[in-house]
Image 1 (cartoon, rainbow, N blue to C red):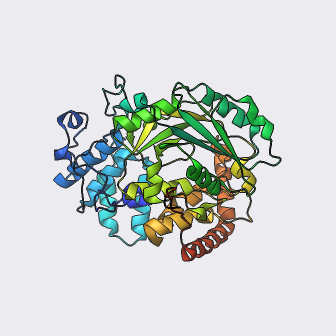
Image 2 (image 1 turned 30 degrees about the vertical axis):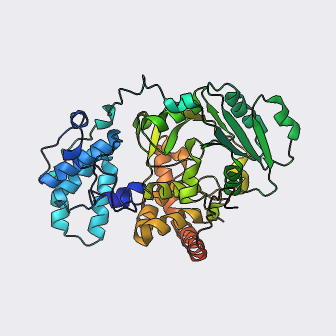
Image 3 (image 1 turned 90 degrees about the vertical axis):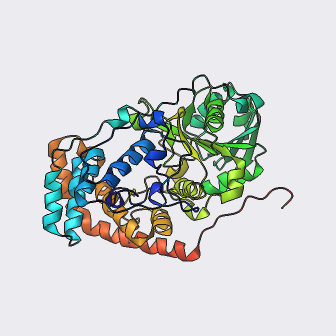
Length: 447
């Protein structure tokens, strides 16, 4: 990425990597349209011209530039002071101190590091995301794709959540877009066939004996008849325009993927995700894509079965292939977070916070993904950034006395956590040795 210090703060983000064609995702500022440049905030306090350009490129991407302007294929080093200025602008001061400590422990010149840290002490956090790039034509855009009404296949895997699934299917009954089918892959015990008779939907139910989430999704995708696949879950709520808004986004941006936004029940969409951007993540609970994307990059990797980040790994393949995936705030959904069923019954919910100390930390599939695409060093940096936070109990963050208690508890648990991490690393090594379990999507003719 443009700034070296991002490898400490975002070691395993998609945008750290170049695509297969050798390009990055970051636009070259002097190639940007005039109206986009006017939305950016030049910073003359950087000491190098290159850092000033990289800062504008960062702003453009994160403020929502989705165009096809030429992007960087390589990056130059910038002065250390500019590195500190950059992270002070966009990250919390705690993380700036974290980077300084890592640099000092890595035997970098302590005088240069401390001086650069000191010289940038007055840099204030940027509020640039409060002024995102607007897409003025969106509201009035009359989508030809929506008017053409292609068949959409909505895929929902479910496991012992009929109460929640009822709400999802009821929401789908209210869709303003009518040409869609729903494929539910039901792994519940006991299986309730009569449950589905109550819904006025083009509904196909696939009973699956094995409790396997990625198998369920792959099976439904192979069985889907639609040109588009809409991925959902059994514990979300969607608006009546959910399908049509996903299609409109794909059409408006000439994208292959519309990545919807989640927000917890009773809350609002996070401000940083309240506008269109290139998607830096992919979630199978709320997304729509051409079925042909699976033909191009393959189905979901079953190395993630009963574990986490299978959707993130799929999103990485989409990104590396150079396919456009747009984060779409208008196709949002409420994450109900059901307390039972689903992955919770498979013993795997939080990627970094296992339910007990007799489990690896993080879940091995997480390290499998990190090491496969980013290498050992980036995986270790990611562990360093995420594991200490995962030790800290959520309830201890609410007040100062509990905060002190939480810190002490984290120190006491550290030896156990180290064992958990080593365990996870070894299990991830076995996955890497075995290799990906990615099935190709074949057409009927190929089959």
